[in-house]
Length: 399
Image (tube, rainbow, N blue to C red; front, side, top):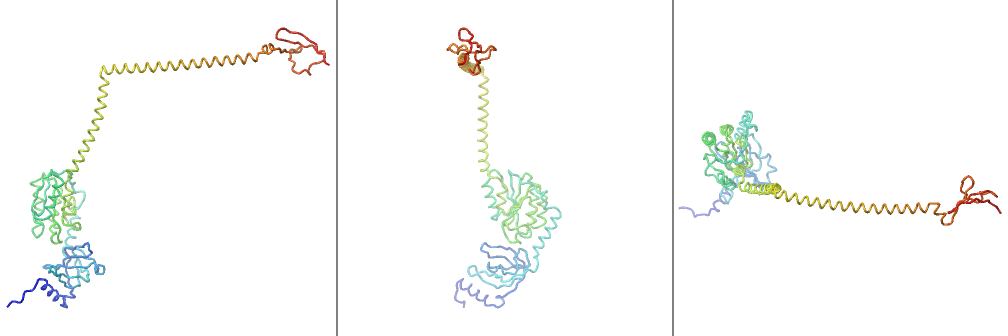
C-alpha cells in the first residue's frame, strides 16, 4: 500500500535533513576543475567543479571569499573542502565551499595556453595582419546558432540602427564536438561563395568554458586568420576570452556589442548629412549673392548709373573742399591783415618822431651822444636840441 502523499516542500525538507545529518557530506573534500565561474554582484561566487565525466554546482559565500585560501579561476584544478547543501526552493543541491587550494591548472586551461603560445609564435595574433572593419557595410553574415538569443539580439540591434545593410545568417553549431568544424567550414565557404560580404560576425552567447570551447579550437583560429573578409569575434560575455578573439580583426565583448560596432547609425548619419546640406546651402547663398552683385555691376546701364552717381558725389566732394579752402584762405588773410595793422601801430608808437610830436625833444652833445643824465652836463657846455620841428644850440648854465 502506498504511503500517504507529501508535499514537494516536505519531501525536499526531508532530503535536506538527510544530507545535513550525514557526517561525510557535512565535511567533504573534492578535487576537480573550475568551470563556468561567475562572480555575482552580491559578492557570492558560483561555479561548477568537474572531472572527465561529471560535475557538481558549487557556491562560495561573499563572507567566506577572503578566507578561502586561494582565488577561484576559470580552468584551475583545485581541492575544495565544504559541505553538501540543498536549496529548498529549487530542489537542487550544491557543494558549499569552506576552503580551497590549488592543485594545478585544469586540462582546458592548459590546452588554451598551449594553443595560444603556438599561434602567437606563428604570428596569428599580429596586429599588422588585422583588417579594418568597413565603416559602411552593405552585407553582413552572422555565423552563429540560428535559434539562440544571440542571433535575435544581433539582428534586432543591426536593423534598429541601419535599414540599408543586408543581414544573412549562416547557421552552425556553437558547442559540442562538431561545432568547431562547422564554424571553420562556414568561414571558408563564405569567403569562397560570398566574397561580396563586407564583414562577418562569428560568435555566440554566454556559457561555460566547455560550451565556449569550439571558439578555442585551432581549426577555427586558422579559418579566421585566412579569411579575406573582416571578422568580428563575439563570444560569450565581457569576461570571456577565446582564441577567436585574439585572431579576429576585432573583438567585441558580447554579440550585442558586435552588432553595435558593425554598422553605423543611419538616423544619426542622416541628421548629420541634413545639417551639412543646410550649411552648404547657406554658403552657396552667400556666394550667389556676391556673384549677383558683381553681375549687376557689369550691366552697362547699371555701370553708367554708377559712374554718374560717383561723378556727382565726387563733384559735391570737390565743391565742399573748395568752399572749405576758400573759407580758410579768407580767415588767413584777415588774420594776416590784423597782424600787419597791429605791428604797424607798434612800429609807429616806437618812432621817435611820434614821441617828439607829443612835445618831447632830444638833447645831444657835439659828438651826437644823447644826453640821458643832466648831471653829465658841464657848466657852459654847448648842446644840440632837436624838437619835432627844427633844431637849436644851447649853453648849459648850472646854478
